[in-house]
Length: 133
Image 1 (cartoon, rainbow, N blue to C red):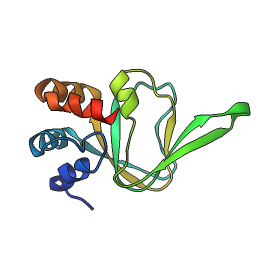
Image 2: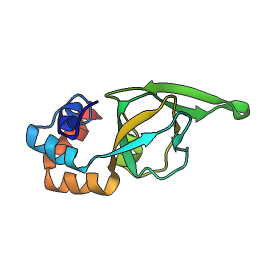
Image 3: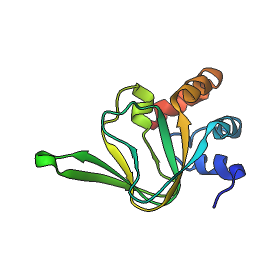
Image 4: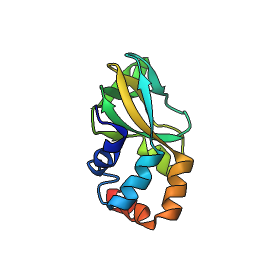
């Protein structure tokens, strides 16, 4: 398990944060909060507000959208080091998919308001978003 001191290193491996310097990574890491999920727990549903992004520390999360006749279509399974939920965080629109824990999972989350404040203080974060997109 990565301790709180390991969060900047985990962020540095994520595409959205990878272009940031040590100062910005540390500032971002300080705003992330750990959340634990049990197997089968829904992190968010399609249509929910995009209030936070997630970075997986442990476990696996399935991202899915609804398909014809009420079926679900899994389009990605994320695991340790993977980032998800960033699009809704960036555009402020409702979630376009749902996320469900396939295993017990630990994720780091960053609230949209904290992310906006970080961008205002550290303009290089906005540059990193452009590179990411």
